[in-house]
Length: 291
Image 1: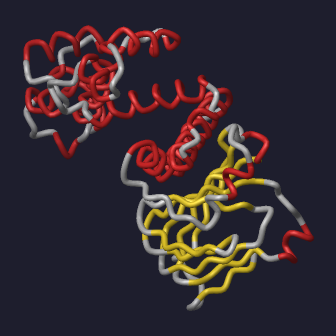
Image 2: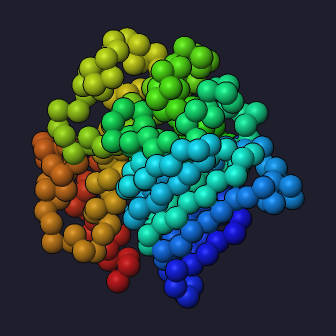
């Protein structure tokens, strides 16, 4: 596309591109400017793809299909790369997810209604999609092989549900797509509430308005129960803090409490079961090795 910068391009102009299974992820950081995808570009190459845009920082004004919308931090937009579009922006960070139209479970005629529309990324599935997509560039290097394919499919499912919800077209989605997104939402909820001692499978189920039995059934294919996942992720966060030299003066019990394990004896017992040493001894051994 044609890109015009308001000022001379410098270190602010950065681009990161990576594949994640069926999708491509593009992160751009730039000073103020504008971009145009014209009829000339379409004659040269019609990519037949959707671009899902998430505003990370700054403001963007984008237009397509005779519509124009302003995008602020967290907002989501959809661009049809088979049609011309134009956008202008302040200094910004944006993340785009590109995928073939053939992979979308939603009809092209429905999705075209969203071109040039700003979807607030503040509530519901749109908020989950916005948050996850903004984090994707930092995670790209950690995915490989089949894991990347599964992650890309999960992102595509989440995007599809967010767009279908905005279109009020949820029934058009395959049941497995909705199930995958519900599972992803549960996992995300767990990750965001690890510091809460009251986090249990029951609270996860209640937050998603499903029964405890159905929650356990969702997690069955992974081979790891909900309580086991909560415990494993809490211990992983504790281990990370114990190995952080900047937190060397923080009491071990305080680290356990920080991640939802306020009972020092219980924390010590389950940490030893997972890592072979009580947390204090584990910290001492590994910090000594680094010196």
